[in-house]
Length: 337
Ligand code: PEP
Ligand code: MN
Image (tube, rainbow, N blue to C red; front, side, top):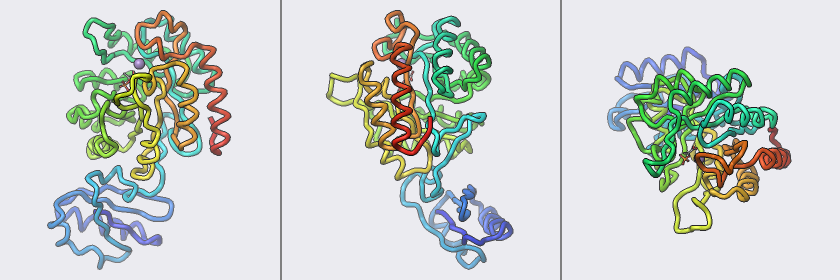
């Protein structure tokens, strides 16, 4: 349930409502908007109906949220959430771009990629140190050594680091080196891992599961928020369909659906979403046009030599063209990049 306070409600009135709920044994979550404060309460509906809240001063109305996801819900927080990663913002009028190789392969490879990312004006460097590969014989990533390289190059360039965490046992290591924790498609419903990243203070990039519905995805974000971490960013990366021309089917309608259902930002990954280098630019353009808050894109100094996902990785020249085109599209949408 959410308790919508009157626009003029005072801090004392908000506190009084919170105290009343805490006394009754409920947990509360506050959403302080520009025009009003909303208090979210999670717990047994029947028990909640016994607490008389509408009589308290400053309360405008109590609304029950019918969806399973509550904190993620736009009803709980009508304004768009803007996530600030050490000065780099995700959400609002500025588009965020997270670019870099699929996997960290060496310090030289990462440094070279980062120089192009930095020169393009993007704010985030991506790169996997723990790689979820279909085959156990494929390159699995440099693990902690890769994390160290990411942090080093992040320091050298000022780029914020986004990297995947595959298992809760690596949480301390990944939190030490990364600015944003990525939950990959294969782990979107690893509920234990979601709860663990929910206990950290790092923003979480939550990729859509290979065959997850929008509702399942929203609930996955709720797992993270229910543990107290409100900094969640969705990432649409394509879903599994019968189509074989592309690696996945990039579902741009999900951007619109997520924006309607939730206040959280959403970015799009046209690299994994298509698996085809030539499709990355047009689908990136489409993503911005439907209202995405940013893009995740794979680029490699020499894709032909990449240890992972070379076919979908942009070359440095492709990447430069990509960014120029995204910038033009951003203007069309009244955003900057
Ligand atoms: C990735 O971004 O490196 C990745 C493995 O993506 P996904 O989880 O979307 O397949
Ligand atoms: Mn990849």
